[in-house]
Image (tube, rainbow, N blue to C red; front, side, top):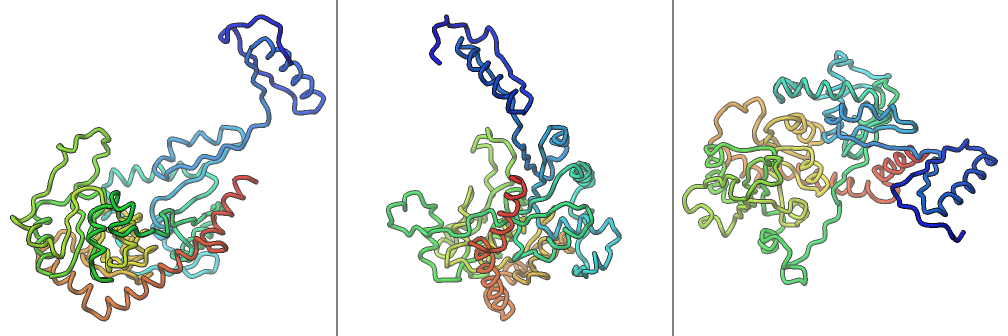
Length: 400
């Protein structure tokens, strides 16, 4: 409807219509809204609210605990750790029952206790957050039933009547390799060009994630051990992220390596001191093993790529992820036993462990299983695959 009325300043008034949701009432207020808006006065029409779906990190549960007071809303907890770890966290306080709803619970012996993996203050924080998750409507995991189906099923038998969805892996499962000299080679990391020159399954990728800072003595022993192993490697050597987006690059510590180290190993080793393209490295045909701290993101990326994991857990959920990788899935090998974490590390220990990754029959069998599991996980993301079905189930639930 054309307006012949004078314009009104937009800050004079705002009209909010609150109709009864019945046709006769809606129709009249819609026409009234049209008439008022012809005076250039904003009109907001309150209809049936859309469902508000909040997905929050499990460690942010206290922040969103009031979501339930919002009409037509629900929240879902996203767990950044494995389903295996979450199941243990919930199952152990129950007294570790050997069965749940008639299903046997199969957990390896001697799983590291939480008190050994976290400071007491952080355990208290975790407990407080999980107390708030009782208000949620379900749980989401960066996991795949292909990897952790047994533990997802057990989580669904804990008796809380909440659904658990395993919709991972979230990382891309297909990484295209842009070879050196291609039109996009200028954007590639230099370590990828180096990988292109190596034989298949010949390189060990070494990275301890973004939450670990190594002491100088450990860096030195690791460096010497890698050098003496005579194995090809890419080593990401950086301190833990400080959580400060504004920190100057010059303020970041540059770890000291033995004098002349990078020059001596340049033909068979690359040291990366900043961000590294981990997905591309793991997906490269030259990569044989991942020497890792076993953070869950790294585990998922390595498993998806079909690369076996040499496990050196440092803290948090990593010791329990090591149990899952090495003793349940059997796609990894323990390099540094968690029970020996307080013992000094020597270069000869590193050398012997790294050489074991390439020269033993056990290592071959682990690599074979890792390749098979990786193919299955990638397949789970395809049409009709387990993870695709889980995602469709979650979408159907929140749009019901």
